[in-house]
Each structure stands twice: as C-alpha cells, then as structure tokens.
Image 1: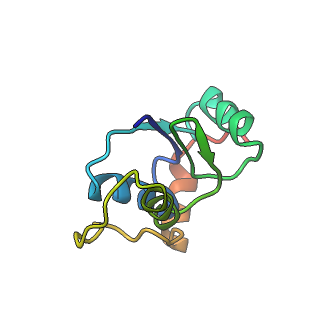
Image 2: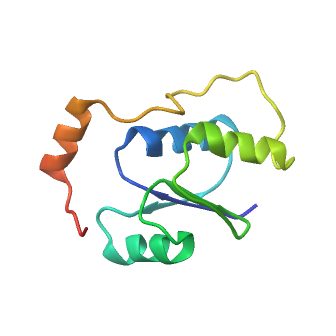
Length: 111
C-alpha cells in the first residue's frame, strides 16, 4: 500500500492520522505542508481544496480527514484488519488553543 499523508508538523488532526499509522504499523510518507510551499501546493492540486490533513492511499485522495476517518476508510476497503490495540493519541481532535498559540509562534506560513 502506498500512503502519502499531507500533514502539519504539529496539529491535533495530523497527529490523529499519525496515530492511526502507528496503531496499524503502516508505512507512509509524512509530507510537511507548513514549512514547504511546494508540498502544500501539491496537496491542494491533488485534493482540489486547501484543508488538511489529506491522505492519499493507492492513488485515492481523502481530503480534510481525521485519523478516525482514515482508519474507517482502511477498514471498509479491507486494507487493514480490525485490532483492539488503542491509538496512542486522539484520532478525531483539533489542537487546543494553547497548541495553536505555540504553533503560530514557531511555524512559517505560506498561505
């Protein structure tokens, strides 16, 4: 399975996608859309919209998606098997106001 995840370096939704990848032991490409303008442009061109996270699985783009939704897609398409292993981070949660404030002070924004 080829997985490209267009993610922010630190974001509740992006961390939820990463948690699902770890939970199921899936290899994926973690593509930084905040610090690399070309990565962001590629995500927008492929997904047809500007919101993240976006996850491309074997050529199918899942736009503006949570980790929980990614897991549901993978299960529904028999790409993974159900497991009782818990995710190590929330899979359907935004960042807190404090996390947003820290990110605003650190990241370079192109949009």
